[in-house]
Image (tube, rainbow, N blue to C red; front, side, top):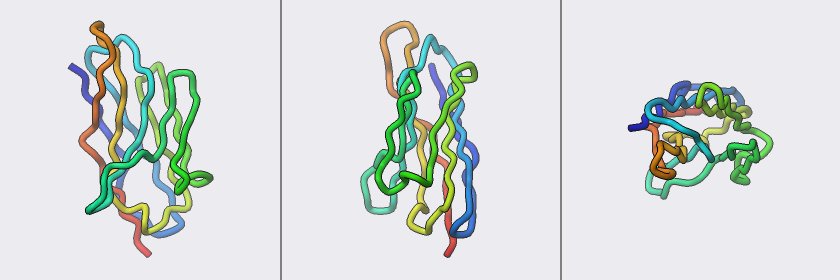
Length: 119
């Protein structure tokens, strides 16, 4: 089994910064794409940013230039540096990863971490 544990959420004023972390643990042979998603109330979960095993990144247009995704493959950890935060960034952020555990790749989600940006 594989677990994704997020940390780093919290309350920040508009214009501030937060850094989210997500550590994968368990039966892991390798991890391909890791990413961050968010779901605002009443909306579907949407991709914020993702990073492949080779380091290729992809961002939603709403966060380009403000958020940076990175990963530490040795520690099976993905980060999301969030700068210039806006009130509309307020929601729960979820970590996602494609993990190979010996029987092909399976998709896993973290429990979510709340980010609140006050105006």
